Image (cartoon, rainbow, N blue to C red):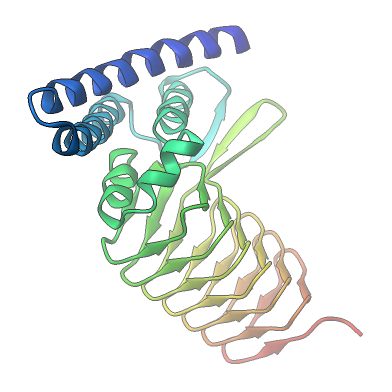
Length: 246
């Protein structure tokens, strides 16, 4: 199965990179080098984004749920989409795409993400499942943050959406697991981690290095202190504080 995955990845990557490069060459070859080179590079990038967008649109829609690995249309679609993400977000290529607001927006939309144009995402953020990701207006995702819409347990693929509201702030190295919902204007400070299915209310604050465990609920305006551990399924009521144990 791994060999088949690699063959499919290499075949698609070769075809998409080759097609994008050829279009870039055609667009720039008749111009002087100083004009043709940048035009060709831009044409190649836009072509690659467009091809990925078309192929993503042809894949079955990802629906939250549990699926046996590589069985059924949703599980296969997830594999195909992961290949397209790896092709478009090859590390050196991703650094270029994410350094431009327009190219970053187009790239994420091509992969199915629902992101506002005026949201802010650092160039080194990892979004593993764009098709299960939404980011509201003015929201910010800081450097080296990690956001996943899936996990695998006992050969079962679990897919869940991740939603981040308008004007929310995820600071440095924040981890967001599948199924998390982060409300408007919420603040997750550096090193904060949300486990599977956590809900963070509007205007809430998660402190430095804090861990909010599986299916916990943080109410609107609540504050989780530095290095605190909110247990699984716990609730922090709106406007309340939860501090680390002494």
